[in-house]
Length: 227
Image (cartoon, rainbow, N blue to C red):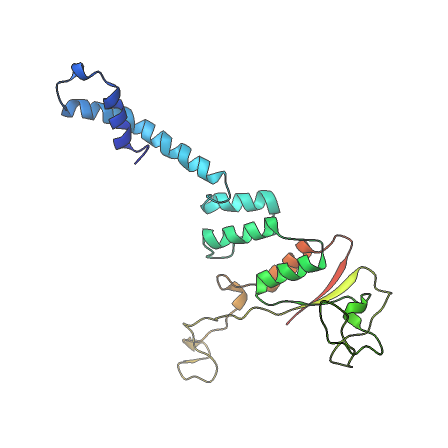
């Protein structure tokens, strides 16, 4: 392997004049191993440092430092989250669309797996209007059916919108019992209160709030509902 001790020793041997040694000498190999050991260590350190300077190859705490450099505390590693999954989230946060309605929608959908419902009271495409019967589509405003489509609009809420986000489905925790079972009781057995927000990889309500805050325009106000 390039840069390891065997490679360094082979390079040193190749640099020696052939007439100096009739054949391979154990003493010579031992001497060259002693010379090559610090160089092999130095090469491995240089290779490691180079890897940690790029998002695509950084590992361990160096990946956390890259996230902190670019995003501050907005994108922390989740408990037990591997480097690969964390790297994908960092890339998504760096290259995502932001400060637009579509950016907010796409960012929240990428986080939770479900498209959020966004309602702007000052946008007639969201509220609909009396006499409108068209189905909701990208080409036109929604029809207006009380309690079903459209909504009450207001021009007294400028730069404000309402967003409803669904929490992603969770696999829960398989090593404890649930209600209605006979394998556990109060204070004993395989039963416990579980905070799903503490499970590895689980999207918490705080993650949703942080993502929305990072994606929305600075001069806008968002009213968030998490279901």
